[in-house]
Image (tube, rainbow, N blue to C red; front, side, top):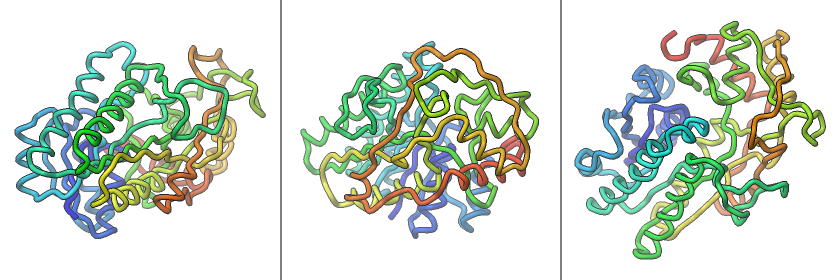
Length: 337
C-alpha cells in the first residue's frame, strides 16, 4: 500500500517507515521538520535500502495534503505529526491545540475530499485520568492532566464522531506508553531538541558525557525501590504495532482503540541499572524532590492488542538499553554527528 506518514521524519515515525518498507509498503513522508532533521531521510534509505518520498510541509496545509494524497495515490494514513512535550503544552496550550487538534481536522478534511478513509492515529496514555488502579485498560477513566494529553483525547473523540457520522471510515487510535530504544543498526534513534524531556535519552546523554548526572525526581514513592514506575516499550515493537494496526484497519470500517505497552512496569533505578550494564559504566545520579503531578506507577493492559491485532512486545528492557547505547555512542550529537 501507499501510506502517507505525517511526522514521518520524527523518532517513532521514521522507524515505522523502515518497518513499512520492509513489509513491502511505500511510505510517503510529510514533515515540517520543526522537531526533526532532514538527515534522518538518508538514514532511512541506508537502513532499508529504499529512499522514501518526502514532502516538507505542515499538516495544517489542506491544499498540500490534498495534492499529496492524490498524486501519490495514498491508500491509508498514519498520523504522527504533532507537538509532544507535556510541560511545554502547559505553557503554550494554544500552540498544542492548533497543531494537534486543528492539524488533525485539516488532515481528515483532506482525506475525505480525496476519498482516503483509513487513518491510524498516534495517541497517548496521557489521555487516562490519574489513578492508583493498574493496569490501565482501554475502558479506564479518561482525564488528561495537560493540554498535550487533552489534545490527544479531543482527537480521539473527533475520530469516534466522524465514524459515527460516516461508517465508511476506519479510524484507529493507538495509546502508547513510554517509547524508548533505537533501531538495532545504531543508525536511527531519538534525537531530542535541547534538554530531553524523557528518561532514556537523558540517561544516554549522561552516559556519553554530555550531561553530568541524572536527576531522579522522588525516591519515596510506594514502589519497590521508591522511584517512579513506568511501562517502557521498545520503539521497534511500537513500529510493529502500527503495522499490525494498519493491516487490521485497512478495509475494516469502524472506530478502534488499542493500548500499546509491555504490560509491566520498570522503575527509574531499574532503567538506570540496565543502561549501566549496557554501556559498561556506572552512571552518576542524584535524588531530588518529586515533580508535581507525577504518579508513582503507570502501566498498560495491552491484552486487547494481542487478541485483536496479534501484537505483543518482543524486545526486553536490556535490548531497549543496548540499542539506545549503540545509537547514542555512535551518534553522540544525534543526526548532526
